[in-house]
Image 1 (tube, rainbow, N blue to C red):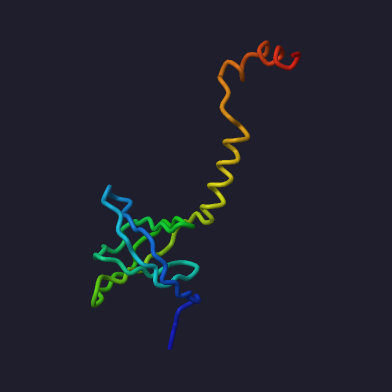
Image 2: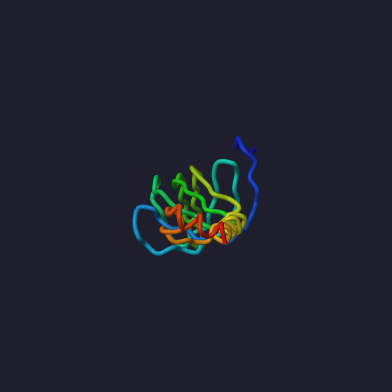
Length: 123
């Protein structure tokens, strides 16, 4: 009988996992399932409990802590308690681009010199 407090969604979603505590190379992983508070990740190596990790997909960045690690026939199943996430990265990228275009860089002189601005308005 399943005794989990939250429903888990099965995903099989490719992602990248990296340790926050070091500059170690990112690892290709597979998010097997997730709930509102965490995820299960198939990884190529073992991770220590309480290690802070970053998991990145094309649409989301998740910061969390390893709370479970079990050996599998191939690799390891890592339980990660999600602490923070940023979702909809594509929407944020589009918003960022539109803001850059709307507020194209002007020189500090143009912004802070009232005479320059006034001259341009009079022409």
